[in-house]
Amino acid sequence: MNKFLFLFVIVFCVTKTSSSYAEEPNETRRITAAVENQFPFMVSLQEISEIHNILNIRGHKCGGVLVTLQHALTAASCILQYSSSQQQLVPIDRDEYRVFAGSVSLTNDSSPDRVRRIANTTAHPEFNQNQHNIGVIILGSPFLHTTAASISIGDIGNPATFVQCTGMGWQLGPRLMYNTMAAINDTLCSRLTQSVPNTLCALPATGVGCVGEAGSPLVCQNHVIGVHISISACTSTSVGAQLYVCAFRYITWINTVIALPIPELGPEPSTAPPPTTTTTTTTTTTTPVPGAAFMFQPGMTLLAVMVVAQTMKASLIN
Ligand SMILES: *[C@@H]1O[C@H](CO)[C@@H](O)[C@H](O)[C@H]1NC(C)=O
Ligand SMILES: *[C@@H]1O[C@H](CO)[C@@H](O)[C@H](O)[C@H]1NC(C)=O
Ligand SMILES: *[C@@H]1O[C@H](CO)[C@@H](O)[C@H](O)[C@H]1NC(C)=O
Ligand SMILES: *[C@@H]1O[C@H](CO)[C@@H](O)[C@H](O)[C@H]1NC(C)=O
Image (tube, rainbow, N blue to C red; front, side, top):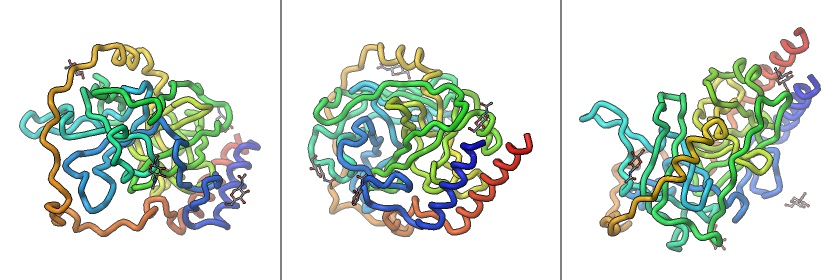
């Protein structure tokens, strides 16, 4: 109950002081820009044909997290695509994508050390919508330990109280952003969003600032706990409850995939067109304001406060 009050107070305080994200690296109350090497395990899955796109996010499609220097966990939905000819989901073409790591800035990719080709991708065989939405990207060669770092998988169980974690992602990029997240137990989670087996929920600890995209990690106690799968939250009544697959529940499967021999890569496929030939026909959408995705919509804070207050009231009654 104290914890509810705690969250409520934080939500309230931040509501009064912030309406946009801050740049200060030490500001943990809101969405914050990460500094170099802060999250060296973070990777970006990028669509090569979009690398020269004017949006300057290098074809960023999904986040991922290195569990070895050659294997990244991500969401299964990130590495599958619908094939209309086969009328089913099929693996993405490994030659059409690459993986970036080693800088908070997606545009800081001129060093070949920061980019890896994909040797294979493996989605969980029982993946179905949000269920078992986890997969592994196998890189053609490992990142150097001077460029990136892996992080081990951990478990926080079903927390009796809030567990402080960190969520991060590039979203609209090009800069990696993060926020403090409070992981919550299944009981509370099921009140705030739809529950899915083998997932956990986390709320922005401040009540504001959803961060991350499909595939990006939830890190608690220096371990990766979750892989982001549902980002519906900040614009609905769900108080920003983010849904993550519990990586630990899949540890046996993940270890099996990691132990498989890594396929040899053939010669480099022909590269994407140079920037000068890029047409702007695909960029008719509005140019994103940097950080727009993190900007908090007025009214949402109030909603968050109200829902948290309701939840608190319900818990007081119980
Ligand atoms: C946070 O950054 C501000 C300036 O940006 C600095 O004055 C302050 O000491 C920093 N706080 C911590 C805890 O590092
Ligand atoms: C790009 O990477 C270099 C080398 O790590 C780093 O010093 C620099 O700060 C980065 N630039 C940006 C804009 O992130
Ligand atoms: C790639 O992974 C799939 C499982 O998703 C596996 O069936 C296939 O054999 C792997 N390909 C190679 C070349 O290892
Ligand atoms: C779930 O978490 C809330 C908030 O910390 C706590 O009040 C509640 O007792 C927990 N419920 C269970 C079943 O652990």
